[in-house]
Amino acid sequence: MLPPQVFDVSIVDALGLVSVVLATWFALPQLVKLRRDGITAGLSVESLANSAVSLTAWTVYGIGHGKVWVVLASAAGIPATVATIVIAMRAGVRLAPRLPIVWTALLMATATIDAMVGSHLIDIVLGCSILWFVWPAAVTAWRCDDVSGLAAQTWLVLAADGAVFGLYGLVANVLADRVYAVTSIAGAAVVLARIAVGPRPATRPATLLDLDLETVADLA
Image (cartoon, rainbow, N blue to C red):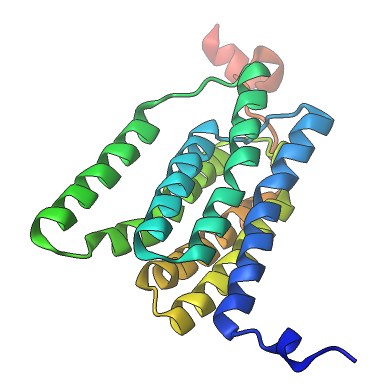
């Protein structure tokens, strides 16, 4: 029989452990799909670069606030995210650095303001960090006719990750986690909706073969 202390695990620790598992799992489906299929259709490397910035910022935030589970859950997703960016770029996808640079600058400016005036703006800004991943990913997905390069499982895991982070934020009283929960679940729903729609017929310029005889006569 196992000693009682084996089961003496706090809710915070349990949710923290689950968040680490989900954070590690979150980045893997897209990486595996990209390595297996080599398809980048619908994939936004800008969103992945923003995610790498966010995960780094969350890691620093967790260290600064003594939140070990936040540190572990954030750091866990960095390697697979960076690997996905590298593989996508090697496959020919171009990274426009403007968004990641702006996002990094915003985080640094917010941290500086907090340090100067004693505010807690970083809680809100970091809580919304998932938007910097979801926003370019959703825009790219809905603009593309083909989204076969996207891994739906990534977005399902993101929704689950958001729910766990939300519970952790409530129990551990971490505002940033609660804001993250709302934005991640909503964002995942937007991208999953696009994946569910499936491929759209690609538009092409009209040719004479597409025009009726009357239109041809008018053109003549």
